[in-house]
Image (cartoon, rainbow, N blue to C red; front, side, top):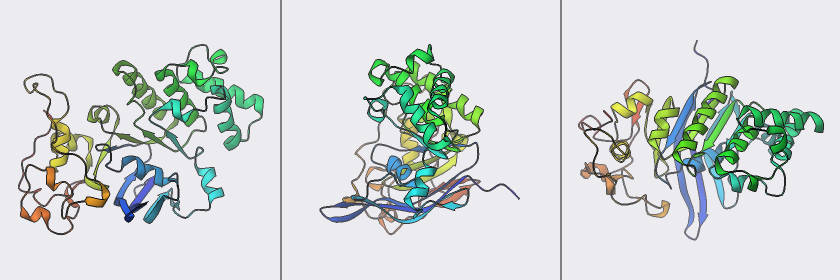
Amino acid sequence: MSEPPLLEVTDLDVDFATDHGWERVVNHVSFTVDRGETLGLVGESGSGKSVTCMALTALIPMPPGRVAGGSVRLEGRELIGMPAAELEQVRGAEVANIFQEPMTSLNPAFTVGEQIAEMVRRHKGLSRRAARGRAVEMLDRVGIPNASRRAEEYPHQFSGGMRQRVMIAMAVSCEPKLLIADEPTTALDVTIQAQVLDLLRDMQAELGMSVVFITHDLGVVAHSCDHVVVLYGGRVMEEAPIDELYFRPAHPYTEGLLTAMPQIGPRAGRLASIPGSTPVPSSLPAGCVFNPRCPYVVERCREGEIPLVEVGPGHRSRCVRVSELNLVGTS
């Protein structure tokens, strides 16, 4: 028998309170993450990527948000509805997060060494001395020079790339089973971005972690991920192994994202874009939520709920025309 996945998310629903009542921002999202796998969650801003991952360990403030339904199982344990005290032990020790902007995630009033040491003291029960040593060790492992001295410095004394390395050191200090990286390279220049991605991959291989990588950058996905879930309007539009998604996309939205990537070679030219913008939860269109922006829309795209259907091994698409269309992938 094959080993069960590390993480199983089934029909996850998340609502937010608005002036118009409860609005659904994540709608029946399902995916799995195997041990040692990197899963990419892809989509434009407002597609539901970050909310989905924050809901996994109850990081959404309630109110105004709520997990309205579904299941999140880590190694078979249900996290939805888990008592707060137990969930606090899961966060950091078993599931760790790296956020998009490290300057707002690190506390400016404490040294970076103190912040890493606090994490390992809480979850590993180390003494202050041992925790400080662990903090220095982790800073050294993520490539920060003079780690012992720099552990005594504050976040504002680090560059953006170095702050992100501090966040990685903090996240992996307790050797979690699952790392959730929420657009960790967005604020960095291209050279530093590549260094951070390589560091994440090295730490994953060293510790045997699984990773959920949230991004809107399909170039980053190609560099980092084994499997991809494409979100739009809080729904899974397509799910596929990385090569399948890039070479044989099965949803027009995925094709639009791929076409919008900068190209070199014969296809290079004016940068393409997807017309329109992502819908707000209060005004989702009927049928396929992508239909107002889709170049292939027909009348049946506007009728009823569109199911997520299998189009190949591990490859699913939420498109009624999936068998008719010859969509363009990368060459």
